Amino acid sequence: MDAYRQIEVKMAEKYGSISNGTRKAIGDFLLKNDEKSPVNVKSNNVDKKNYSPNIISAKKLIKWLEKEGHKLFFIFVDYKKVDNEIVVIKESGLIPVEHISWNCLTIESQGWGVIQMNKKLEVNENQTKKEFLRGLKIAYECYMDKEFNKMKKIRDMIKDF
Image 1 (tube, rainbow, N blue to C red):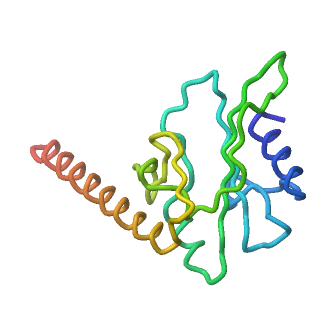
Image 2: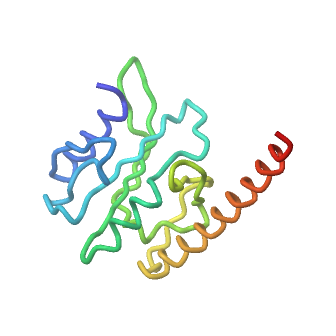
């Protein structure tokens, strides 16, 4: 079992659940077996340089949150391997997605756009779901502008072919 999977299993057990998520699922396990409350575990090996890790597909997040009563939680885990064993150094605990500040997130090119953490995790427990979604809209607009400008450059690059 790889390190990521071991950590997912540990976190699920800690919260009284079973980790049975897939790479395509919205979360790695369900909180209290509630199908509307998945938990997505993001692990980071502190001995490696992990620049702007992917958090979730922007489209998948929007489609999930637009449904009534749907929630999403994240757990961020820093770990290292010691003598081939996983040692958890730091764990954030459950963080509702709407409490993650857009000050540490961006949307980058991959499919319909992927939300990445481009700075150290910043949590705002006072941020509402509506405020989070407003930040998502702004980030998506920035992403679309970058993609539009990129497409213009490609068009110029190939215009004489």
